[in-house]
Image 1 (cartoon, rainbow, N blue to C red):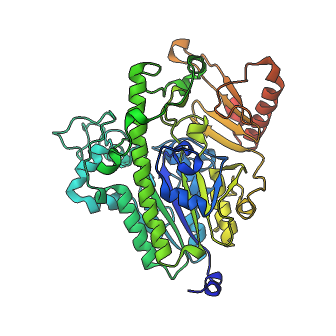
Image 2 (cartoon, rainbow, N blue to C red):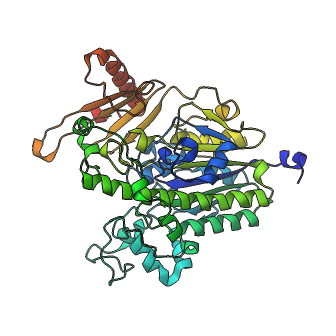
Image 3 (cartoon, rainbow, N blue to C red):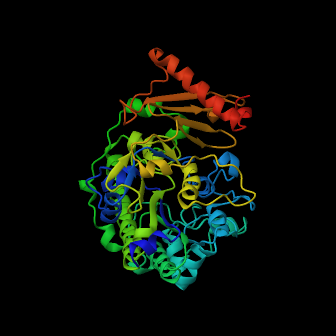
Length: 488
């Protein structure tokens, strides 16, 4: 197909997503240990965003913000067990009504039976059909007893009176995320390999129609059981550890301190963390390899020139920074996410953007680029298109990004502008504080001069005016968002 023919076709979109991928674990974001050649190539051919933030650092709320353009307090899915309301419009509804083939292949984590507007929908159930009897092996390895590790319905759908899931082989011990990286499935049977194959099959089938396709990987989300060659790719003793101080740990609000890694601050804890990072990097590299298969197929099918490719993730991973693991907070390890976009001839290659972007911005951006109007009965988007930044990387993004977590009982919020990251905790009380006790807390970090967020300036009298300004701006925004009752 020549360039003139391609220019007349509607824009295709291929959205590759992963789960729990820290921007600190990518070569194109400065990590010289982890091997991510395929995503690094995508970055070299496109644009990297350095200030892309998570809107709600946990799987389901973040993913539904990504596909609706609404923050969780508007779309209603505020934890991993809350389904998206049936009539909420997603990116699939918008592109479907414009004549696109829409497909979701991989982890959505919807905890209900909806397809959310996608014509072609293959989630974990289709993968289980493919695995057949091997499903028992997969669900053990993925922690079937712990909802959130790729098989949430296993715990959601069984009767409360039942014991462990019937999918878990009774002869195997209860999974407890012990960093056991034994290989349980061959590489071709891993979820990421399945997602890559099925995505390629959809590309081959619908190559002559405009498409909006999401390829959604589970890795590098724990637990860690990558294929054998990736499980041994990184030696724990070679893994550098992040620097943090005991003073930082002591100052953490209870919501963050609850996620310290085992043995934090001890030699045994350091050894655990090195094993953790090595296993995590193995997951990252396998996910990268599977993403590369999709990108290679796009080239082979002559679709690369007219397809916007976007790579991102739902939330990050602390990887021991500040003594923490997992997500659930607004430190950069959890909340600042990779975002790479490529569209030859439209997005400058090998560039970086410093524009502020968050997860509510994807849907309006995609619609803007494709020239598509929102589907009927859609809510107004919370996000803002960053299409102008894709064309001109030096352009500014929106004035600030917004994040929230813990709705509705003990929420806390992030407001991040070009200079400051401000976090407000509505309630940091603990059980020992007694009934009715409630204590608020604040964090203020100078993003320009303290990129590692080591110094919380919220209690420094010299920054009292900045704290007041940031608090007032956050409260004003929450009132606009109809959340003022949380502070009354």
